[in-house]
Image (cartoon, rainbow, N blue to C red; front, side, top):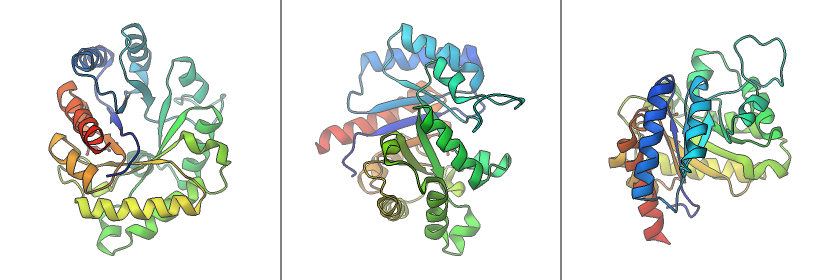
Length: 260
Ligand code: 13P
């Protein structure tokens, strides 16, 4: 298992309206008070329209989670209808931003160039960026995944000021494992974790946590941590209910506590 403190991020995607979001947030709060996860960093990333409500309850009820956004504009302000800026997120108390999720890349034509510009906007604003990378099935089938992921990493991260390193997290999310119920195997994940860490070292990015995402749940979390060597998870479907999300959080927390 990796040695850094685990990080578990719930990506709610386009689920849970603000009433439902407050409900799930409060449940997470109660459950974490009953059973703290003191060795694990926990983040939830609700839809934009829920952010104000979720940051409010997290602050007022002192819930041990941070709040993230699922996307942000690379631009500071101005004529960008439908977009949201980094400074707007900061004002809400948002600390994390997911950058370049495969659903943004594939369904909303987010190019590598825009991913890089967005990452820089997030870092310049002092927020923490979760850079998502990962190949689709056709790339995996032709054994191109290592090159593909390296190119995505290099394109987004090359030339960054080293002062930003502590704000960067990478999430490996193979597209074929997202929402399919078919997680990558521990061996596939372990191979990719080693590869990604080598690429990061080559880019002079040290100490960055590397997460896995793709059909993570309470059953496969421990194996992915111990045998897969991940530093935590980006969780989709299983993050929509407090019980299943906290099951992943506690699995991570217990693993880390045992290994220390
Ligand atoms: P699932 O956990 O639903 O497969 O989603 C993974 C994901 O895309 C998280 O960002």
